[in-house]
Length: 339
Ligand SMILES: NC(=O)c1ccc[n+]([C@@H]2O[C@H](COP(=O)([O-])OP(=O)(O)OC[C@H]3O[C@@H](n4cnc5c(N)ncnc54)[C@H](O)[C@@H]3O)[C@@H](O)[C@H]2O)c1
Image (tube, rainbow, N blue to C red):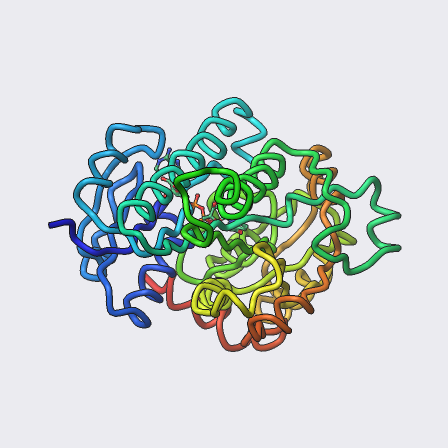
């Protein structure tokens, strides 16, 4: 008999760790953790089993298909934006072909179980591409359907995978003779920059704020790779995890779309710097602009209009700028680096 489980790919990443704990708290079903890297020892108590493996390994996914009955799949494994720009073809392979492999697994699971399989895909504000900084600041918050012209490989990959997920849930199900509508339930969130107090930044282009914070708490000076006027939305990792759990628990009939963006706070880099300096007055924070990364961040919106998420599934962040710093990031990072 196949073992019922929830599958998380990219389980050993920043988001994976938070999500594993969140699922263990909220759900009464075992988690199978898949990642290229071994799962950290501290996380092992929360999962049924761990698999060290590659999402591009179709044979491995076929074995998982025969051994487990997945009710939900959280497909987090990806090459993040900075690495994706260095190795765009590898990024395409992992981010797109890896996602197709996982969607295919979800479809096979739904067919063999004869019931719905929910699929979560973490997308990003990198799907947006605004022409200039001037225009970005003029337009302010944007909706989910505007400015979908990404300028990075990572953004292209994310946007296409959102569309693949929607295609397999809606169009393929209508067009395919032997696949019943409703069997694949694809849901996605376009996350802003996520800031965690318990893991180190992993190579995203929004890492200038997480890096600034982590360095300040460790007593190191830091040069931001984008300028002081730079403005994109951010959110704490706990709010990001809560958002995933909330979206996945919302009855499908309440959702008016499959892909939502959300935001919590959006200060400029200069405002973040001043706030961090108020906690660590002796730390030197400066700017050493990387033009390429600056142009990428300039193409992302200064904020997003998340009224659809608020209306459809009651999205609301617990942390805004002030309490994120005061109650989560500063104390959390001090604890993280205390030894
Ligand atoms: N962190 C953010 O700010 C942010 C923002 C928006 C979206 N996201 C998305 O959320 C997801 C998780 O991000 P994260 O911050 O945890 O990233 P991360 O880099 O910390 O984790 C990604 C994990 O995927 C694993 N992985 C990479 N290639 C793999 C492969 N071929 N097979 C199996 N595992 C593989 C890595 O080993 C790593 O543990 C990603 O899809 C990312 O694009 C993150």
